[in-house]
Length: 74
Image 1 (cartoon, rainbow, N blue to C red):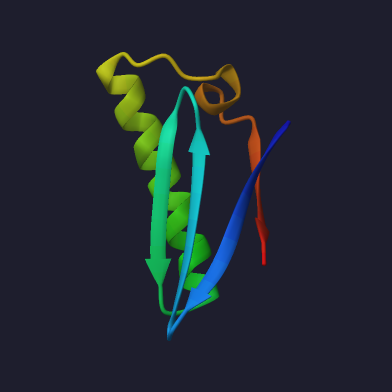
Image 2 (cartoon, one colour; image 1 turned 30 degrees about the horizontal axis):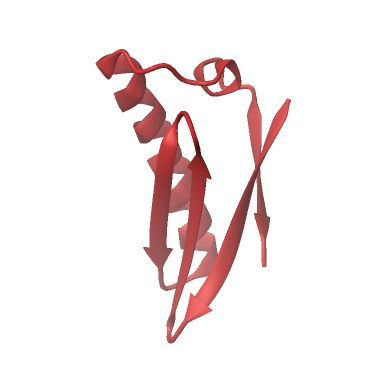
């Protein structure tokens, strides 16, 4: 299983995080709570993967097969 490391930062009253892969692209999310941020990131990553697959983009196999685990770091 591949680990996806996502850094969480705080800016003012909000939290933000991003993840980048040279092949798959970038996912960026903001929210007012850490719990919501994590949920939104997971949903956004899945939508991004689905969109890439629908467009015929080449993705790393671990993303296509959903063989990854997200690890949030503070």
